[in-house]
Amino acid sequence: MTVLINPTSRIRAIRLREDLLPIADLIELCFSHNIDAEGLEYIRHIRQTANNFSGLILDNTTPENSTLPFHGYVWVENKQIIGNVTLIPLRSKEKGSYFIANVAVHPNYRGRGIGKQLTERAIRHVREHQGSQVYLQVRDDNAIAIQIYRDLGFDEISRRTLWTYRPTKPLIDNKPSTLNITGREKEDWPQQKLWLDSLYPKEIHWNIPIRIERMEPTLANWLNRLMFAEFQRSWSVRRESKLLGVVTVDHSSDSHDYCWLATSPIWEDEVIRSVFPVIARKVLFPKRLAVNYPAGRAREAFEAVGMRELNTLLWMKHKILPYNSTIGV
Image (cartoon, rainbow, N blue to C red; front, side, top):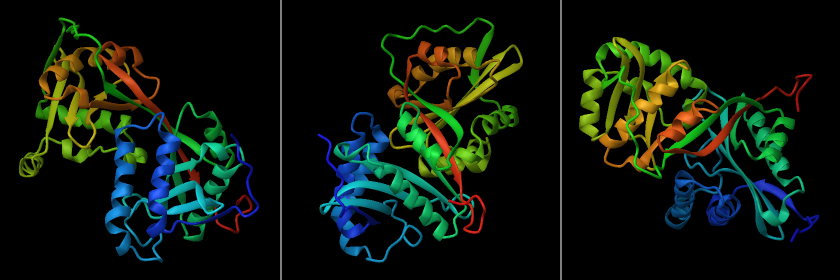
């Protein structure tokens, strides 16, 4: 059933004390068909905050003066929240950067421009607070949303696939006899870092749990992992003395153990096919393994080692133009 928009519909800022639970319900309803473990954890966190801390939240909180990642705007229809945009300042990124974490519209109200108007309001908020850029992510199969964001001035800056380990049958070690897999050597680090900087540019660090500086094989990093009981292990792949790739497995997320794959497009297929069966046998929980990688690359190799595509996301950026710009919104 499609519901016509009532003239009393309006956009207003999120009221954290009263809106968190309805927003959690709306997000779960809108994304239930493809929500992942991290999304479920985000919804759980919203509900926990609403139930345990809503009485401590001040009425005048904004994205800029609160650490809670639930700010933004809602669309209210007949006293019911039927649309939401969540806006988060990226304090770890350059000043003036914001992230649109989700745009959710109740299924019965879609096709009426609500999502576009909420996104426009979020962009206007960033401009009003002297922000310089807005980022968002959208699934590559959501053509309608992608077009809306492009119409609003967002440009694609990256396209990433998240692969997770889901073997359907025992893996066969298909490592070519010419390849040698060992623990990472200290002298492998400079080349590994060059590959990592290319495959995981700083532009995307704000929303993936990569910590390249912590992968460097130093005593300080080793002591830090020991002190905080953090798991990290690295494997190198060589042909004779030639380094073809390095994979560092890092327990950096509550839902996944990320495998940070560092290699060249020339060798990525054989590195993946040779090293991931070894890693799967060496870790305690192989079903937690995940790889974030540029979309469209090494698909057959990932599938051959028992991984499946969890999602492919477009990373998009909107550069905020000042009010006096001749091209401004």
